[in-house]
Amino acid sequence: MITLTYEFKLEPTPEQIQAFDQWLEVCRRVWNYALRERKDWFNSRKCEINACSLHHEYIIPSDAPRPTYAQQCKSLTAAKKEYPDLKIPHSQVLQQTLKILETAFVSMWERRFGFPRFKKTGRMRSFVFPQMDSSSLVDNYIDLPKIGKVEMILHRPIPEGFDLKQARIVKRASGYHVMLSLQCDVDVPSTMPHGEPIGIDVGLNAFVATSEGELVQRPRFYVERLRELKLLQRRLKHKKKGSKNWYKLNRRIALLHEQISNIRRDWHFKIAHHLCDQAGMIFAENLNLKGLARGMLSKHILDAAWDQFLGILSWVCWKRDVYFAKVNCYGTSQTCPRCDADAPKDLGVRVHLCPQCQYQTDRDVAAAQVVKKRGILSISTEGQSGNQQNVCGGDIGLGNPMKQKSLIAILGSPRYIA
Image 1 (cartoon, rainbow, N blue to C red):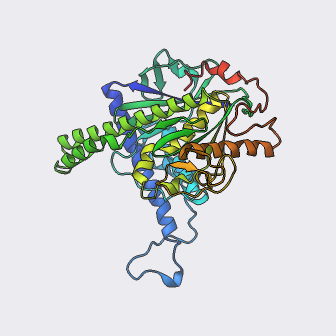
Image 2: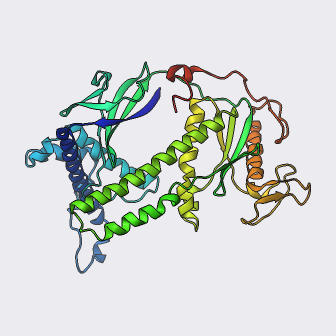
Image 3: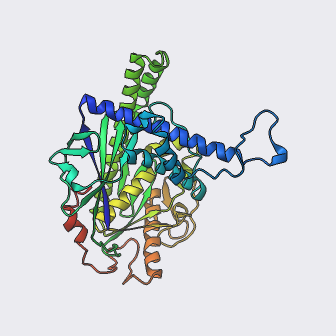
């Protein structure tokens, strides 16, 4: 089973825009009410009976069950009789809002995410139609329940053999978008190690350094536009909150942030395809990106968006039948790729010079060569490797040299499916 998400820009009418905004506001109120109900229940169970606060305390009957998705959906049905505004959106849209809240609580317990937050006016940005079918797509229109046909910019066709399962309406600074979830009942085997391997090292001086000696410089997506952002935000501070000029300036700031995000994402896809053109296997470091983002270089690390790039690279490798794996990142820049000797160096030293074998190269290139070597060794330990050569040598001849073309045959050319 393959699931793809295609995003298209919508061109709604003024009446449809008003309906979208009204639905988002109702979803926001449902989210806040359900979150308040859950939070009150948790707060009433936080302290012991003999240790309650002297000022105020949440008092909920001890036999009251914990609010769940099913219980809140049942309460939502009863609340529609008292609050007619809840009948305006589609019933499944409001149920999906409660389901997302339930997922947020499960992520908080199991994945140690933060406690779900209340959403102020304008912070609810999307809602979902969970049950859609392919008959809703007619030419460049999508037929949404209780809203009607909405025009969309179909910049790429829907691939044949895929069925529409759900649609998410997303509000951004540039307008409304629709994210279509498409599924195809076909089994695509996992990519096996094959072809020429390369290792990559991500950094700030050079965004990507490959084991073949290539250095890709990093564009400063956010830093280059920081001056313009500061100017607009300084002007926004002197506007009356809620006025027309405040909304206009706030939208200009949001559009600039969206432009930065789009440029960064597009560049990441191009670099990912550029790397896939060179090899059949790509190895990267398994970095603690959350920890790095809290350091003194957090602004530049978040601007580079290594996590997003590695996710995009993994996705592009899967689509283009390139083997991708992450290796241990410990000591990659402090190890000689040729003799495996320790070569300690500070962050300011940008040249690797081994004290034993006198191997000299760029620091990031040496780290990428260590990553490549560790990736090859990890394949060898799994019993999937063939003949190996030196890390600085050529093809190592791993796995079956014939690539599986099933996914490309389904979706089209590799460049298109990016």
